[in-house]
Structure formats: C-alpha cells, structure tokens
Amino acid sequence: MKSFILARSPIPTVDKDQSLSNAVEIMEYEGLSALPVLDDGRFVGIVTVRDILSRIWGERVRMISLSSLYVSSVMKTDIPIVSLDSSLFEASELMIKHGLIAIPIINNGKPVGMIFEEDFPKLFLDSNADSSEFIIRNPRIVDIDSSLLNVRLLMLKENLRFIPVVKGERFVGVVRDFDIVTVLKFIQDKVSSQHRVSRVKSLRASDVMRSTKAYFYGYPPISVVAKLILDEGGLGAVALNEDNSVLGIVNVRIFIKMLLSWGFV
Image (cartoon, rainbow, N blue to C red):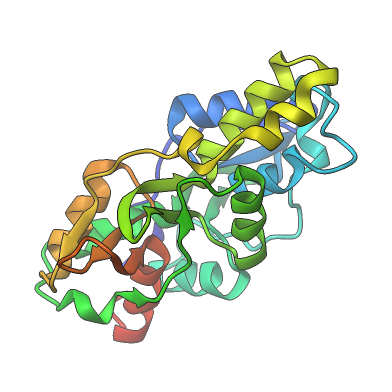
C-alpha cells in the first residue's frame, strides 16, 4: 500500500521566515497539526503543534507576541521524509520510530502531501477487531480545576496530545494540545505584558476543555471507535466504566502501532 493513499494533498505550507502567529492561524484554519516549512520554495523542515506548545509559554518568550517569533525558531529540520513511491508501512515505521505526528511526502525537493497520525483510524472503519486490544488503560487524567500550565507541562513531559478531564471521578470532556496553543496565543497577542502572567496562571482545564462524543462503554468493534474519533475530528476516544469514570483511552497513535504489529501495511 502506497503512503500517498492516506496523505492529505495538496498541503498548505509556511515559509521559515513567516511569523509563528501566521503558522498557527494556517493550522487552525486548515485543521492541521503540522505544516511543511519552505525556504525559497524548497522543503527544509516541519513545524508541529507540539513544537509550538513547547515554545509558546517558554520563559524566554512569554512576554513576546507570536507575531514577533519566526517559524524558523521552532521548526524541526532533521526529520525523515517519504517519497511518492514509499509504502505506508515505511511511513508508519518512521512515524513511530521518530515520534512524529506527521511525515511529509517530498517530490523533487517540494512537499506534495503529508501523512497525519489523525488519519490512521480511517484504515479501521471496516474492521471488526475487538477494541479492547487498542485501549490504553489507566491513562493520565486531569481534574476540571487543574491549572492549565500544569496540563501543558504534563502533555509535554509525557508526549500526550489529549487528556481526559474529570470532575470528581466523572468524565466531563477533554483538553487537546491545540486548544492550549490557541488560548495561549490569544493571551500573548492580546493581553498586555503586565497582566499576561497572572491571566495565564488563573486559567484552569475547564477554560479550554471541550465536550466530546468520542467516548464509549464496553468493547465495541474498533470500527465503531474509529468512526467516533473521525466524526469528532479528534485525537482519540475515551473508554468509560458504567459509572462514567475513565477506564482508558484509544489514541490515534495506537492505530499506527496496531497496523505495524498486524502487518496490514
């Protein structure tokens, strides 16, 4: 199976000398978690939501508007790429080995598409496999009143892209990486420097949490879970106990790992 079958193409790009604010706006508008970066029209790297999440409230830049930061300050240049002739198996292996959320497809030095981990559930829409194999049990969860800065640090430390939010023991929603980027971007761009730190410190998980229909009970076929994730445009689904406490999660990365372990690609 060729890698291009799962690629998004054409793919928007950003120049290394464009502002980080502009990159975030493109990603938000296009619903993308990563962008290829160009220099004089040639591919030189990628910028991802994780790179931005790590940078956006760093101690050295928290008093600077994102419009004053360049894409080149956060982009990654030393990353693997795939070609039009590469197999999906090869692309999947590289994504897991290097911890990539997306991998670019390059032809003649230019990006012609990009494969995102969010799209791998599409390959399971006809699968009757038991979802119990996909559930990551005892995942990280956060309380609805948790500090947003602590949630950000947890995401960065443990390489998480979404975290279930609970009130008491009851599941009430999720916080996603891009949700945090969006609110911190707004504060860095719009709130005066003298009030910026106090404003961010006051934020709680509830301020960026979103409700979601991507949850399930029991062990339905993985096709059902995959559809839930895709319908919500999300990063995973939450497995719940009968009392609505969190049993586990199914994140989009596990679909790549299962494909590789089953040898389907």
